[in-house]
Length: 198
Image (cartoon, rainbow, N blue to C red):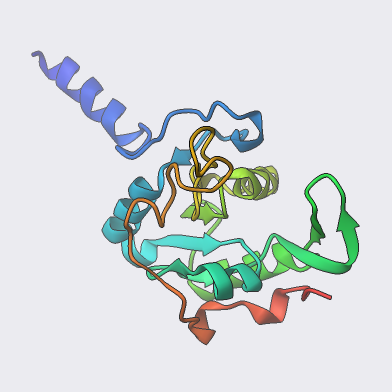
């Protein structure tokens, strides 16, 4: 290999997508404008490698963290949506989820408090990868350049066949056997910038 080829290969490596890069999701709802995707395992590995240089954000509701659990290596929880217990969603047979009006303010506050920038690597996690895709698009639209979404989320995708059809057991953080806990760490909750469930 010539010196020029070696230099070009090195440049390509330095400016390429990290070694961790899940394939583009087949679901349109999980796709993002930046197209930065990680599986739960890839997100865990990347956080282990980069530590405090990378911000790992769970964007689920506090209720989800209490009853379903959260990753042990989580940096912060900033809910993207909250639950309005006064409104019913017929389509989902559940209470309506509404935007957390404090999400962007909270996000900016956390990024600044951790001495990070809009060019720092950020991983977003939700239940299955749909909310994190929406949040990633919002952050990309205001200038964040390295926002990754965990495509299989914390609980994973729903099974399509068998006796457990409709239950989340295909992939995701919990199903990959990655470290998680039911215990909440107050320092990892951004309660100041959360529009609480009603």
